[in-house]
Picture 1: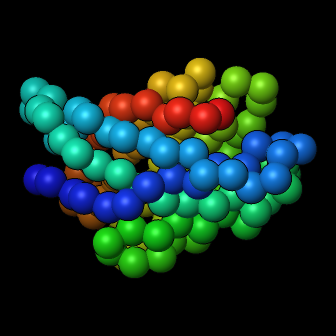
Picture 2: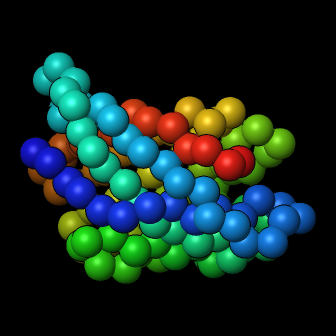
Length: 118
């Protein structure tokens, strides 16, 4: 299962919104072995440093997603996004990024990659 999308924009507390690009190069479907991927995702954090607040939006080839900041500190940030038929969870820590897409079934696809510019 391949999913392709766009790029990521991230605003950290105290910073003006900036674009941060994340590239997910590994894709893992359920318990299967991971394979190569080329997955990109675009989001904007307008939550002004607040936790558990709406204000994060994402655009993908599947449409626009609304989201929340789940956790944020000096070196990491975690988000939750909701879209048609799926929940997206993104964590970035020291440039290492993990994105999991949880779908009905239940089933999950996990993407491993990096974000630059945090």
